[in-house]
Amino acid sequence: MATKMGKKEIIQAVVLADDFVMNLMPAETIFPTILMPVINVPLLDYLVETLIKSRVQELFLYCSNHVDLIRAYIKQKKWLHISVSLIVSDACTSLGDALRDIDTKGSIRGNFILIRGDAFINANLTNLLIKHCTKLKEDKGAAMTMVLRNIGSMNGSSLRQESCLVVSDKSSRKILHYNVLRKDLNKVKLELDWFLNHNEIEINTCFLDSHVYLCSPSVLPLFSDNFDFQVSSI
Image (cartoon, rainbow, N blue to C red):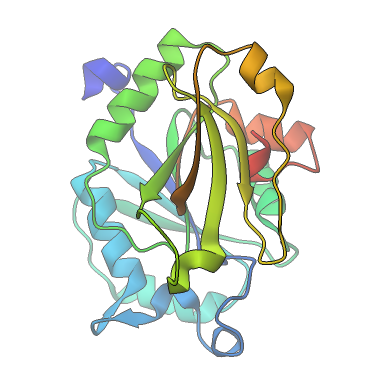
């Protein structure tokens, strides 16, 4: 892993404890999403175990709400093979604000894993990290690898409201367009340039955003330099 991802590179991850969407209101006003139990185990525990399996050595947990609860929970945990640090901000109201604040802290030193706090994952991300780093060497303009989940047809599914439109280059798998499909959306505009500038493109509406992003060192400065950026802007 060290030779493929960079000599002696420490693998870091950032977990955003606030999802900035408030899907669980009003529950989230009294208890943090990241500590909500899934089969009697807090969501944070699943995330940490996944990161340990993926050989992450440093985890930064970013939060602006329920700070005392989260700090107390971290303090009583005894995770091995990973250090967990809390980054606190009172003024953060969006994902972009959070990433700009993290950039000013200077804690992230290379490629890193970014996870939204409402994500539920139990997969080993090691191979995806290797592919991400390989892509960065092949394409100097690449910044982020989005981890999408293909769940097939969403007709009649409760997940339909979270479905997204993904347009990508079939050979390079570069995302040309990404957008969450709104309930009131009756038609989709397809750009002519997608077809003129690429031999083959794929148009897919069967993907869900897993809220896991593999980021290059250029991601945080991009957010700092562009105050209207969100993850889908990259």
